Length: 605
Image 1 (cartoon, rainbow, N blue to C red):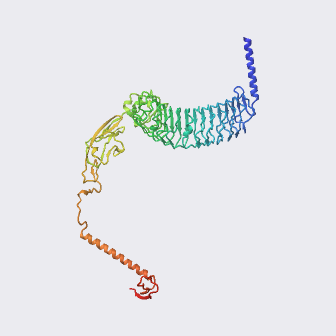
Image 2 (tube, rainbow, N blue to C red):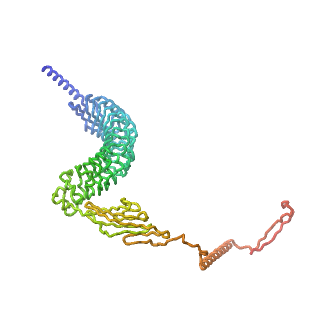
Image 3 (cartoon, helix red, strand yellow):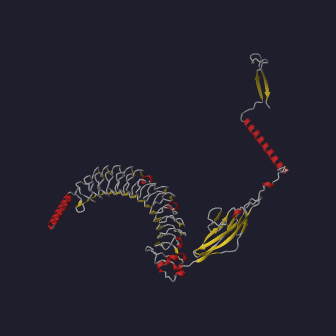
């Protein structure tokens, strides 16, 4: 048994040595062949064309960083076992049809950083085993129909940094197993929706540095298996249509470094599987309350480097798995506990880079400073002066109740202000409050509804309630509610609107100073008018008649003057005129030769 094992080992060693010597003996000039790994390294050898003489057993061929310009038809047909081919960083501008025919084992093909402008249909014929294709950093203008049709096992296509202006509808036909597609930095001006719909198994799509200004409805239809979508560095993107993400089952969505001014709530509402949402580096100013509740599986929300000034209460309500909030480098002064579904689930909080006001609203954060993970970036106070620049971890438990305090909201003037007005008036009801932090003012209408900042009855920016063109049905009790984190206070106002008599049409308005009237409050009562037999008096009639007579005489005089000067311009005027005539026959014969003519002279006056 021992002798048999030794013989087998010797035989195996001999065969291996023979194979290595054969592989080494087939190495092209200026290339390095590594027998153990069956690699041929021809990188950076100033080659102008693909060399010959490769061993048929080669598994990896590196031709990068050369000066190759053309890849001919069946250029690598003698390498049936080749699994990786690198043609990156050459000057390739032409690849002939069936250039890679015979590479039935090839899994990785890199043609990065060349000068390709177009890829003829059939170039990738025979690459049925290919898993990864890198076409980035070329000058490709268009992907034609069926360009990749035989690459049925391709899983990742890297097509970044080309001059793509158009992707044909069937360009991706045949890529039935493609998992990842990158279309960064191209000249596309719209989403190639029809082309993408061919990729029904696509899981990851990345589109960076494009100049597309809007995401239309159904932009990614049929991509039901897409899990990750990255849209980054689109400086002109301002609009995301409400149904643009319909049909997607994303778990990760990144729309960052764009120009969104609001969170696209309508587009997000159907993404019930979403776990990570990143809207960083957008000029978003507020995260509104109760609008993200449909994202029931959301775990992370990122909005770093934006223009955020407020996160409203209940902003993350209904998100039981929410564990990370990243709002670093914004304009937030506070973050209230009421914004979250449960602060007990929160694990990572990035608040650094914000002008935080360290008062009672942030007390919940400071008390959890040892349990919360600030990701290595401790928040610090900007105000008040007593704690300016102090980071949260520096505070002791004893000083927290003294430093992190608030003053409850208090309405400043509580005297009765009931208003009794007439219909059509404009009423201004002022409600001013003080406190620390500054209270917010909310008005409740007589119908128990919250008054908004728009409409005939609205709340002005300074908290004043304005009722324009008051109606009888506006009568009732209006309640002003001043509130902040430390407490709230309310005050009721009575408004009584009286119906305006029919003989009054001029509007008025009511303020704290009293009633105001328009500059011309004349009322017109058409029903009370009495017809008069003579609408004008005698004096008016005389003046009107005289003016009319004078105007008539002036017109006649002008006509005579004009006729006089016209006649003078025609020379000497004749005062007589001689007229010849033939008398008409007394018989009705038509005036033949029956009578003599006559003549008479007229004197012109």
